[in-house]
Structure formats: structure tokens, C-alpha cells
Image (cartoon, rainbow, N blue to C red; front, side, top):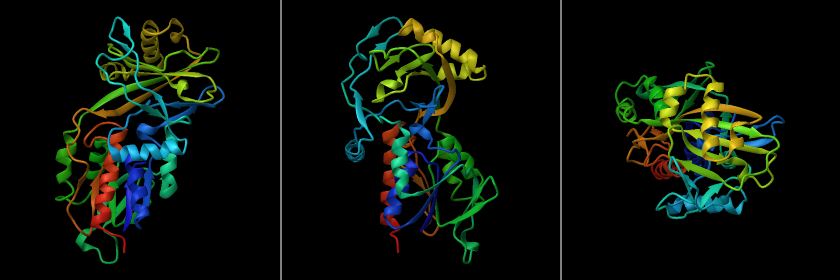
Length: 346
């Protein structure tokens, strides 16, 4: 089959890798000019040489299938164990770790989380800066054409036998609404419409002449902040110091329309009272809104698909059976495994 995957997050990339290895012709379409989703990392700083993970700071591995992938990345030096617990601020005091928390391995990529996605793109053609505006179901009226047409916003179009939508549920909802199929495809909309998201603002703050703090991250129960992350502590040879301060969802909704300067002032001011005084005096900062940080009510299935043999369409992502990197990976993995059994390459 010729398969189009919309979204270059970890769920879309692992599905693409497995389906390509299984003999299918796969293309991934990504609207940005770099790998996005939870694995997004950027080069920042005055000399643009400071790597920062702007979304997911780290992740754990519980499922054996995901652990196997993590071990593969560890062997290749793309991952390392960062820590087994974090200090916890309860609003007044800082504790060594979250009360009752069992220690577990938290993994990071020394060269930035996007290296994980970069590793997976070796197996699949990925078209960056290609925004999908929608797709059209050709269906039973087609002759020699394929079942689907992916329509880009630059007016280009690609014929596909099958489509996988690997975007946040809100974006998947918008894409499905563009389909001309009034029956089977739109049955998915009801389920997508139920998914709600926690949002966050990620503030990256850089400090040019500051020694590395002795803490890696602080989890917070606070009116503004959920995490204060010493992102540079992940790097073997960091080119400076960068902290990532992640707000809670309430702060996002209250302040998302304010200027970056106002948002930065509120977050830095509060972070300085939690960790160290110098935190509110960065040399530079960048504000990034993370609109689809985590699903509040994940769908209790590994993926969704329409039951049509000659025109498959499926939805995958981190909002299936979870809301993190592991659930995203397992969603893409389980769909690819299912399709390889259902649609073996000819």
C-alpha cells in the first residue's frame, strides 16, 4: 500500500518505520520545518548553540515493548538515564522527592529529544514544511485512482491507499471534517470530540555566566508552575545554562493572551522564590505555548480505524490509553503491527 502519515511525532514515525520495513510505501507529512510533538528540541542562545527540550523533559518506560525500544536507543547512545526522582515543592517547602513516589529511571537524550525522532526518520520519507489542509475520500467512484487524496495547503495533492492521522485529537478532528465521506469517516468525530487537553506555557530562560545548579528539576504544586527544569543538566557538554519553566493549565488559560514579557515576568518571579534568587534575571528567554500537552481523558483503545478493507484510515497518538511518550509510541506500534497482519505487502 501507499500510506500517508500526517504528523511527525513519535507515534507517526514508529508506525512509518514499521510499515516501511514491512514492505509498504510510506510518506510522513509534517507542517513544521523540524520534528515536533513531545520530542521537540531547539537550538537557542546568543550563538544558537544551546540545545533545549521545549516540551517533554524526560520519560519513563514501563511496557516491555517500549522498554525494548528504549534499550535500543541506550545502546546507540541516543538515550541515557537522567535521574530516578525529583525534588518536590508543595507550595511552601521542598522535599527530596514526591511523597510516596517509587524511584524509577527517567530517560533523556543527551543531544536533545528530537534526536529520537531523527533516528526514526531514517526508515521513512518525511516531507517537512508540508501542511495538510485535509483529505478527500475517492471511494467506490474511483477507477485507477487510489482511495484517498491528501490535500496540502500549497495546493499540491497526493494519492494514497491509506491514511494515518498522527496529530493531537483537536487537529485530527479538523482534518476529518474536511473529508467528503459523510458516513464511515465522520463516525470518528464523536470520539475525538470528547478528548480534552491540559495546556502549558514553556518558558526557556538562558544564563550566560552562571554555574550549573546541583538540581536537575523540581516538580511543583503551585498556582503558576508545574516544573522547573535544569535542561542543561541533561547534556554531556552544555554550551551554557538553560532552564525550562512549565506552567500549569490554569496559568495558560489566564495569561495566554498576555505579552511574552508579562508571561515571563510572572513565571520567573515565582520560580525564583521556589529555587534560587538569580532565576528571575536571565540573559535571554523565549516563551512557547504548548497547547496539547496531555490528554485529560485519553481514549481507552490503542488506536481508532474505519473498517473498510480497500481504503484504510486510522488515528494514533499519545491520547490513546495515556498521555505521554510511551503511550504515543505504543499507539503507533500497535496500529502498525495490526495493519501488517491485516494488509500484508504484496
